[in-house]
Image (tube, rainbow, N blue to C red; front, side):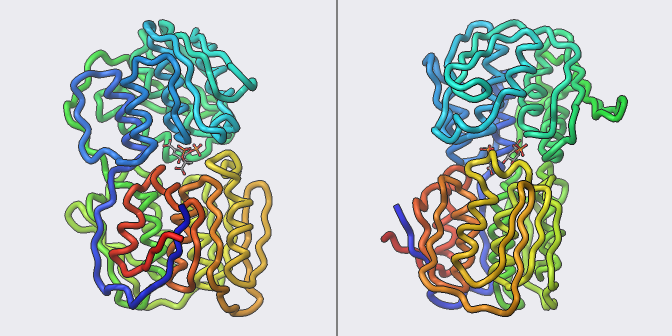
Length: 416
Ligand SMILES: O=C(O)C1=C[C@@H](OP(=O)(O)O)[C@@H](O)[C@H](O)C1
Ligand SMILES: C=C(OP(=O)(O)O)C(=O)O
């Protein structure tokens, strides 16, 4: 299904939205709920990824399909590897079969798990025979995906000996690892970190019973990014309130508060909410950001800069090639269709440069390449021109009501 988007009239000066719970937090709580009974999760994400994980965890089938959900694939692998009564196949979409998982499988097998490949070595689908894992000491490379580390850490409190995890390589997406540790602490797990021979080390103690009954998920900051971008493209004075967000967040993408200030978006924290306001500011000539800690915001910031005519130099993008699509390439292809600019890329960066202020083309085609963030990051450009989002419903991977929310701010959306 393709959608045509354009602005019908001036957006409201003040609007408010309720985004559903964080997909990353929800998927961690779902694993913990499966490990510790009687845990209730409030404000759980309505994303496809969380639904898929929930279904797979409840299922008695022997072949389980996780779709496009990366965290669910990685967390599910570690979970099923530790369930002695299980012998399953864990598979996913065609893209999931191209997303590496070897580092996680090797680490689990070193601990005594029985996980093997059914097709290509190092990639899903996997055959997972559940085993009793006692834990102990383990080294793992943290430079490819933090999800491998989070996957093992989430199940580690169930190991008899707990876990001493030594992270080798340069740890990527660190806030997601810290989110895992923060959530484990809420459950009552004793967590400590140290530094040994230059490596980051995490110690997890065993825990038999959860210290809490109710987990409250904060809303999704990664989704909030699209509204930061939206507000950045509005006139001064425009405001938007987003509920169920807090100053003390476990989500690294809450760094949006600082990333968007130079682009004229000021955040004010309320009681369990944030208010984004477009303030009077002169735009920078160049936005320079290392996104090693916030990889999911790369497309959003790139699209904002493209819309505003601001140069951007985004680095730390080495993980983007193995996400839902090769996001560096996808940004370049779609970005170049909007207006004349110079876009250059490397394996871990993208650079956007304007020689002059250029006009926007009309009816710009936004190919999404099965990546929800391609659709959502480029949609705010409807403020500047008309655009066509291909396979528009990809957004449900993380943000089910995205188009419904866009309609409330006066974007016309028609199926074509
Ligand atoms: O742990 C998580 O919830 C996530 C970790 C990040 O992945 P990487 O660690 O692979 O960069 C992020 O991009 C993804 O959307 C969610
Ligand atoms: C990369 C993402 O998710 P995952 O790795 O869980 O598929 C994302 O949501 O941007």
